Image (tube, rainbow, N blue to C red):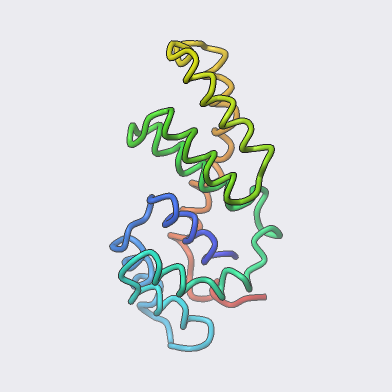
Length: 168
């Protein structure tokens, strides 16, 4: 399993804050011994800001074989979390597209970037495009599978056991 990568996506997308990642670590470590497999989770528990958390999970992320367990790349999962936030009215459509474009750009996904920037340009040219069924369907069709995958990863992370910390 790729727990550090899952945690990274949750935190990067602002779906998890300090309290949530510390609660996750605490729950996982209740019956765990301190060893090479659990050390990074202890570091997660004590991380009190995003940078410290990212530092704590960086090596573990590198060791996990993310793509062998997942059909979507990490930047797409982050976009899925953004879409979930959009659906719950925590962000607007423009912010969804802008943030998704930024994360795709940072992940060097140039094809994905074009989708977002093209959609943003369409919104800039005509604000009533958001009333267009075709436009909304295009957005929905892109983001829905990513959102479903993101929620599945979140569920996997939250249900993880100490045994799943052992890398194969």
